Length: 303
Length: 169
Image 1 (cartoon, rainbow over the protein chains, first blue to last red):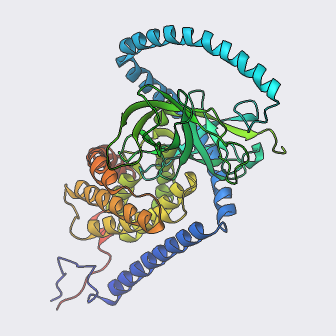
Image 2: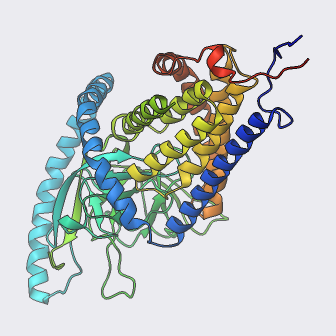
Image 3: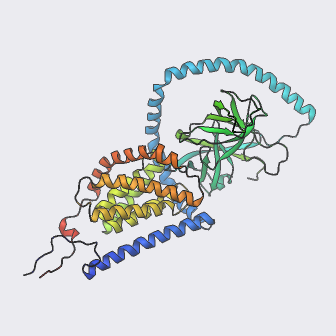
């Protein structure tokens, strides 16, 4: 009498010829996909050979990404508005104090600026590229963000067709965002300041001899560190840190023009073992809610 | 099968767009959860191919290293599909367990791959600060996504799943 096997172990290779074929086919397909992935990683990592293909595919996805971003924006804005309300009262008090301070600072700054312009003309001083005079900005939308914590990168909807090249600085009205790391025809990848591979030469506005490197902190948050500042320099909490730019004709000029705001010092420490200060910064830019950015393109670059 | 493949292609494309262009969050991985759910319902082969497709879409949309996400998600889809075909079949905890396992394994896998490629791979940040939140949110997200996935890809009837039997006597 024929009996049907009640528990069919389709995974066991000792089954029927058909199940063996099925298991073999499954392994072959997975093996091929894994090998293909490894080949893609190797090619993509070691050379630019796949860039045209990736650029074309990214261009094909661009309308969908823009549509998704537009559809979701009202919801994101609503969420942002609701979460801002929680801190609105304390934020208002803080801002009122800040406005009072800034009003008095503004008068001093205007006087200093007039002196500076006059002295600069007298000395025929040759300056390095400055922000924003020597750059024009390409305003663009953020269309995608890497979904993992490993990569602090965004994708913007402007590329080489708009004059953007790799290493161009990216800013918002609040301050420095990062730099362009890949540029395709109609979109580019931007590494944020909070990316592990981004570092910026910077200085303290209050003591310009206190210069160092701003990079991502060791913690998981968006806090930055102002590194390589020697102990004899004076840096205090509340100091504003800006990009240092290049001084004179250096062999390796800075990618960032001088004077872009980065953040404010939140803590300063030092110990006997370390030759540098330990300084933490709170960036001015909120990297989690970037909608639009400005890519700085040098005016000297042919358009 | 062709209809399933077309549906999965479209659904996973939409899910990837939702993640990279709409949600903008790094503490919940909607494509991963959707992929695991689809793989549980449609098997290892389907899961592996779907994982490769999702990975390729993510790497293309974010202009990342091509193949990186594909490698991790191919293996994730395959494992989840295999689990669905064997031990996890018809078990109510299967989606939650597989999402939990796959979340941990893909995070560790990504960490190792980044380390091998010479990228910054802060283990403490990823494993201590981020992973617990991502783990919890992914498992929570499993409830709605599993329900939706079952509507899009209804579980096959027993007759569909067992394509042949052996005569024992």
